[in-house]
Length: 435
Image (cartoon, rainbow, N blue to C red; front, top):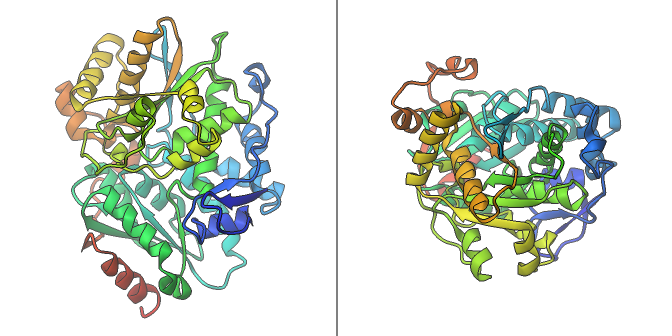
């Protein structure tokens, strides 16, 4: 498999180079040169197959020949080492619980896969690989956990000060070692802009070996396909489901749409958005306008210019009408999010986090237009990652799972900086060149 830049100004690369580079030299995102058709073209074809085998068959075409089969199977086994259950909430709505991994968020799958790929590739490199990543909440913790202690790789995480939950902050600031957290006085878009500036800085890249662990990186983005297959394996209905995805940077839903394009039976996709509704507006008007991010209860989705949307457009050959046939989008307010958490808990004794609540509310709006549909809402994070808001909404305290208990009293280790690229560049050079 080769990958090309969506800016079409650089030559093709293999999976290894695309992973290590993160972003193409022309600042474009990498995209596979072909979309390989997998062996699971029906729901029945997934029955009785192990998660490891499904993951291997899905990912093998994308990594060949950069990773040997035996190594890939090991990577898949370690990536999918926790359950991803599909749980019925009511007659029409099922929840795919993606929060059973070490950091209680869906990003554990992509981060674990990528960290093990980079660990394998780093064996052949003499210089240290520096993973530079911006996070709106969950990416940082998942990347920190996935890469902690990986030889030959250091991680530098930029996160918006005061705009992640206490649990999210602990998960990305308490590792130490090869994990460094930069607390940026700005929003996620400011963090992401700084990361993009770093990758565009030829002077910096001549001196340090940088790559990204955001969903712009193919090794973070592509493995997210796997849990769509695992969801369909557990689907017991006759018709393929509608799949509703809480969407911020749009890497997750893009992976699902890639899996569909490769043959996975899905009836329709819903991009569930909070007040950051640039894609919702695009589907209504055909006019894409980026915006400044708005802070909401579902903070990991507070993205005003989603990077991965360009990949979705590429899947549909830039056709707004074709995309609109396969994907709907709804914008959910904080008030609707709060009401959904409360009502679903009262009616069904099911506890949603704010992101899953956005997804559930969006699917309810879809059901209002298409009654009788049945679908899957991706529950992307454990509610305990947002204790202040969820406990206030429910009027009761939450029980902390073991993953949180072990870090609750750890010391935060971060460096406070302004939303200024030069400060980040100075940190990188002083730490890795002059340190």
